[in-house]
Structure formats: structure tokens, C-alpha cells
Amino acid sequence: MTNPTILWFRRDLRLSDQAAVAAAAAEGPVIPVYILDDETPKHRKMGGASRWWLHHSLQSLDQHLRDKGTRLILRRGNAANILADIAHKAGAKTIHALHHYEPWWINAEKHLREALGESVELILHDGNYLLPPGTVTTGSGDPYKIYTPFWKSLRERMPPADPSPVPHTINAPDSWPASDNLDDWNLLPTQPNWASGFEDAWTPGEDGARANVDAFIDKATRYDEGRNLPSEELVSRLSPHLHFGEVSPAYVWHRVSGPGRQVETYLKEIVWRDYAQNVIWQFPQYGGESYREKFRAFPWRDMADPKVGKDYDAWCHGQTGYPIVDAGMRELWATGWMHNRVRMIAASFLIKHLLIDWREGEQWFWDTLVDADFASNSVNWQWVSGTGVDSNMFVRIMAPLTQSEKFNAGDYIRKWVPELADVDDPYIHDPEESGAKPPSYRSKIIAHKEARARALDAYAQVK
View 1: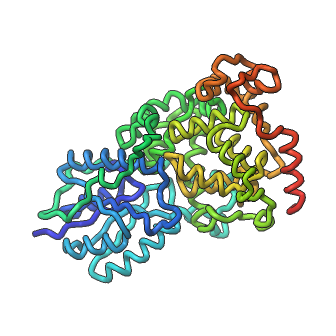
View 2: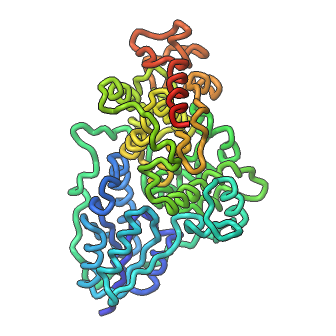
View 3: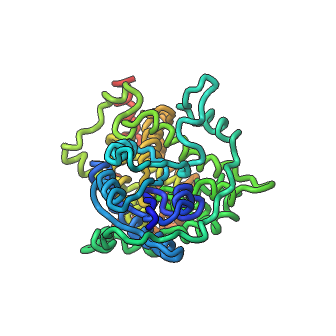
């Protein structure tokens, strides 16, 4: 009998350009394992939308593994303890996995090494990002805190290495450990099935990821404008595929770029993922604490106040009376995703119009986004709120009605807010002010000027 190697999957659910897969396959028989660990992340366990995606992504991964002659073992519980148990019982000498940098995974890797002892080696590979966090540094060797110099420094080290192919075969072990049944995890919502619209919007898995890359290639040169036009289908929609590691950022970089192709704006978005992870690597508490100290005393409205709770609920469910905000929040609920420009508008509205703590919005996105990513989600919310290490100024308050008209969001609004389906441009951006608001659409929950004045007054208290 040949000792098997353990292959530990987390947010890296692919076989191509996956260094841990290649290394494990080269050693001999492989036991691929995915563990649904809700214990280690604690309050950061995956939200409902991510669980829907995970179910389908694991199905896809298992099928790809079976095509190579092996299969995926599923377990649920504490990842470090379960992996150590599988490794010891199987007689494995190595566990291969990709590096993960969320605080809970760093802790899990530490505990796993302790549980394995000296008999089993945990080998971690790079591959979830263009470059490992902490390796893009200033001249003095310090990691960057600001995005622009980070981008310039990382860009000098691009393009990334060519993506590696899928191993020809992945040998199965002589015997298999026990495995859970995926359906028993109940990752898919029922009673009601609030994710019914997800199936029309997405194809999770490595095949779906590559199809999305192919569909985006011809649009990438228009991304500079497309990222701001919610009525146009000019964005990549790759964020959930990248988050779950169904495609590597190196693969996306090489497929999208090429001689004479002006795609730098999109490449900056790929680098933003690296930047966000670099921030979290430096500041593990970033997802739950404002980076700028003065904002830790900011006078957010009290969520215990029923009026504040009512405003928050209106925002969550797209009932604010601001069409562009409502369209975005309803798209999020229906598909688990929201257009790039609209995310900023919706986030700004919660923070500055409603004066609700950015962490409340971050938690809602954590539960409802299929691309809910600890680093990107936290860094983006702190950018909008002005509380982050590199962020927009709080006093720059987005005017959602103006933004809607500027970026031609009429068709987008008509799609997601059916009450306004018969309202023409330019009235659809502010139907209440223009006298075109149908009775079925609610009035604004707060006027823009009133909200702006309240926000600036709150900022003055901590300025």
C-alpha cells in the first residue's frame, strides 16, 4: 500500500492552475477533502447566499475529480481536528493546501500543525492571489497601505506566471475515509427558496467561471465605462468565481490582457483583490473595527431605536424611495450580486443618508452576496464610509438621484423596480420630485438635503 496524500480544499475549488492539486497528484494517491467548518470562523461563517454557491461549486468540483479517477470527501466540523484525524488514520505523510489569509484560517493552519505533530507535514502553496500578501513592499520593506503605490509596485512584477494545466490523472487511495452527503448539509434554502433567481443568473464551478471569462474578453476594453453603467452588461461578473477559487487571478489576467488591448482599468480591479487581502493581512480586525480612530466614536444612529431599525429594513429590501438604491438592493436579493457602481451608491446611502454604522451594511452583504469576501467586503465598506486606511472622504456624500441620471440607470431601475417600469427617462431617476411617482412606489424615507446636513453635523462631532 502507498501512503496517500491529503488535498485540503477551501476557497480554491478548481483543478487547473492549482498548485496544491498539482503537488498532491505528483506524490501518489490523493484524498481530496472539503470541510464545512462553521466553528473556526465563529461569527464569520458563510452567509446564506455563499452557502447556495458552495453547494453547486462542490458538486462541480466532485465531478471534475471523478473525471480524473478520484472523488471529494466531505466532512463538517472543526477543520484542524478533522484533517488531523483523517491524515493519521489514512497514514498520510503530507497535507497540501493553498495559503488562506483570513484570520480564522491562519489560526486553523496553526492548530492543524499542532494536531498533526511531527508525523504529518502541512505544505501550503500560493495561488489565490497574484502575489502573496505582504510581498509587495515599499523600498524600506514595509507592506503598502495605500492602493495606488501598491498597484504600481505590483504592476511591475506582472504578468503572472502562465497558468498550469490540470494533472492528467489524480490517483485514488486504496481505501476511503467516510464522507458526508452534500445534500445533508442543507446549504440550499427551502421554505421558502429565496434563491430561485440565482439559478438563472449563475453557473457555479470551474466550467462556469471559464465561460464567464470567455464572455467578458470582448467587453474588457469597455470596462472603464461599463463598470459605471448598470443598464449595460459590461462587467465581468467574475467576483464569486474568484472568491471561491474556481478560476485563478493569473488565468483571468492572461485571458483578458494581450498585445494592444487597453484593459488596465479591469486589471486594477483584479489587483484590488490583492490590495484588500494585503490590508486584512496587516489589520486582521479590519472587518469589525474602523481603521481611523476618530470614527470609533462616530455618533451612528442607534439600531435599538425602532425608527432606525425601520430605515435599515427599508434599505435591506429596496424600499427607500430612491430608485437606484432600491434597484440595487432588489438585484442583490434576487441574484446574490449587485453592479459595481450601484454597490457604492447603496453603501453610501446607508452610511451617510441613513447614518447607520457601516458594519451593519457589511454584515447584510456578508449574508446576501454570493461573492461575500472578508477582505474585499470590509475594505470596500470602509472605503465608502471614510473610515479605512485608504478611503473616500466622509464629506464626499454621493447624491444617488444625480448618480442615477449621470450613469443612465433607467433601464436598470425598470428591470428591478417593477413599480417604475412605465416611467420614462429622465423622470425615473427621481419620480417623486418630477411628479411621476406611481402610487405603488413609496416616497423617500429621507430627503437628500436633510440627510446630507445630518451626516455633516455628525462628522463635525468627531472631526
